[in-house]
Image 1 (spheres, one colour):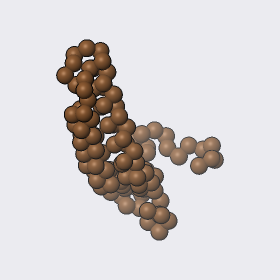
Image 2 (tube, rainbow, N blue to C red):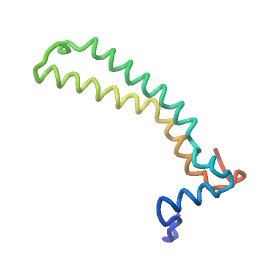
Image 3 (cartoon, rainbow, N blue to C red):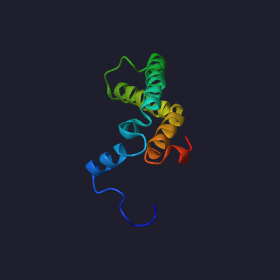
Image 4 (cartoon, one colour):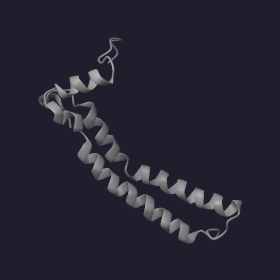
Length: 109
């Protein structure tokens, strides 16, 4: 980091170097488990909040611009809130993936 020298010469080189690392092919899947674990609350919050807001929306039955815009606003709010709720899962996943090329002794997570 910061040396100005490239670590990888493309996607194929990145995959080969990562797979040849200390954990072998398993290092390509670092963060996969936490990613799957993060999908469940993400979708649960998204669908649950969208369903709740749609039930409270007084314009839900309308097909006018106001009805469509209110449904869109409910959907956008639900997606944004589910991202906020599952942000810690995403942070852990990214850190696990970034540490995949380090030796096991040098890893923090």
